[in-house]
Image (tube, rainbow, N blue to C red; front, side, top):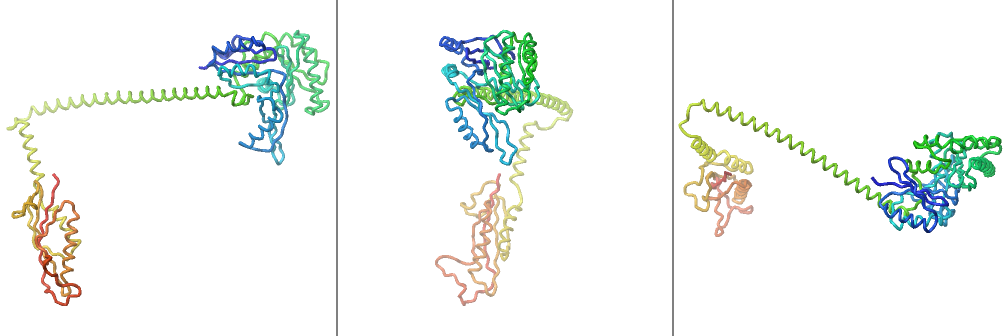
Length: 508
């Protein structure tokens, strides 16, 4: 499994945390100097095939509310790109967060546009990542992760100010209905418990005035604030804000927040970076700030992982297929062995029974030859039924033809020419004699046409060989054929005899 690392960037330094076994590992810090960048380069050199997530907590983060018409697909992407370019033209670290739709007839979409306006604070670190082709899964904002933290803490919906401490800074993030509306970072000059308490009370009061001026909350409406501090500082923080009726401060210890998000270990002080990094590792948001160019190596990593997973699936399928065939082969072998055993038992029983029979006058080999010879003779002998059926089909085509005699014989008939009688064993021949009746108006051409139709019907059978020995009329080329349609000479109405030889080849 690919090793994951979480990077936390503040104004002073970048910290790297390996993620192992569902918890953050030992922190490695790199100051925001040339030496720190070189050390970070060396750190990545041995981890180029690992996966990295970058969490930003810097002051140069802007937020803008915008409303666009209801759009979908590519049209929406074009409008969002233009809006982000208008507000954050000097950076490519920006995104549009959907806040919902207006309830009017147009159903306009409400958006929160967020972006980091000072790219110089981030670009040196990104350049190091890109120079080593490291897979960067995404760039995330601590302010946007705050909405996930509020849901984990089960904070009721409504206006809420989340106050968190980081290294030398105090972040104030305003949420409404669980979604981020505004966030700012203020410096923290005194990190003692008293200094933290005073800073939280002062910044909360300033934020209340700002939100009232921006009409985010109504005038005279108290601001609900949630402060994350170490358990040792909880009482001091609560006491510092007790005298301000405009602030309804709820103090939540870092230990309680850690348990709510599934982090077993408590925090050493009031700083909350570990909480947000744990949230990022366990539930990374779908939206992040890195564009396609920054995530190019991550897409390659995803492709490699998909190919590797696909290869494992194919290998598993092949193993299952091979296992099934092995099982089938084993089962068939068992069945074969069983059948062979049964056959051996049956053969043994047959031999036992056969030994009780009286001895035959012939041995088995001689008896087998006699039976084979008998079967050959049976195949060669036969009746003229097949040839008669073929002749009947010819008579169906020419019903006026009369058959007077049929001389059938297996093989060639006596007196048959050699070319015709070159028959194979099993062939049959028949000499058919017949006549075609003549009517008062019948002419020779009609008789010959009828005779030709009879011959054509016989020759449709590929097994038949038909030879005409006598035509109904003499049709030699040197003699004139009388009896055409315009001929006035009458023809005697005696039947016109014919003789044909039919040879039928029987397949062996």
